[in-house]
Image 1 (cartoon, rainbow, N blue to C red):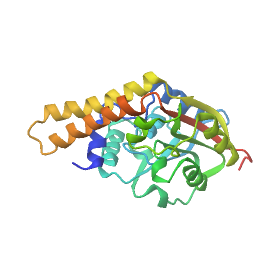
Image 2: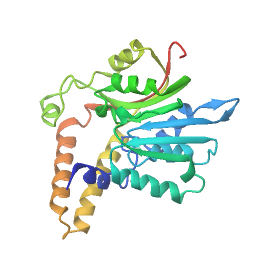
Image 3: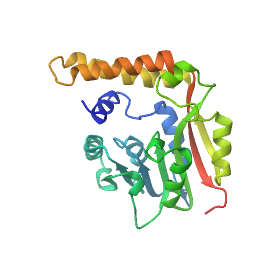
Image 4: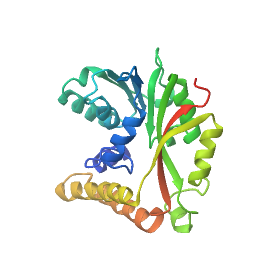
Length: 254
């Protein structure tokens, strides 16, 4: 079973592929969505949209918004298409692109660019922000989420597959963003409860799928992936790896 399929199954009960509660997602969107003349409006872009959940929630109940989502995962994009078609008034306002997010181009800029939990595709947080800026309209906002170290990573965390210099602490992470020309206008640090809900959902949903499909060729791979992920989380990075989601604007207003 390939990694895209494993990830799709694992996120079945937690479609926001990051340690964020529904309430946190709603609050972040309210702070980030573009406003003009007191009314919502504008164009949205999600670089690394997965199953499109951020965009689906942003478009719901906001008929003035239109959005583009970009991802390589065919299965995830198909789920996004199906979900959009099932929600009144969204299907014709969401366009999905199956391609590398680093190579996406558009003729018009966007009022909000999102990229949450996809920094690995760009080579880190600052390269993600540079990619987002290429698509950003003057005065627009970026909603970006990435990891940071809650505490110095120990050997167990590093053995779980992380590098010590992969992240910095929260203050240093924000300092680097500001030094790159951005200013935070809102932010959210995921709580341990949000992390635990996300990880139990990831490992538990995948495990349940394997138990419900004992004869599927992917059964063993799914159980192996769930067990390995749970071990890495509980014995490795739990309480060490943090996640911050920031709403940013350019310091120069551009």
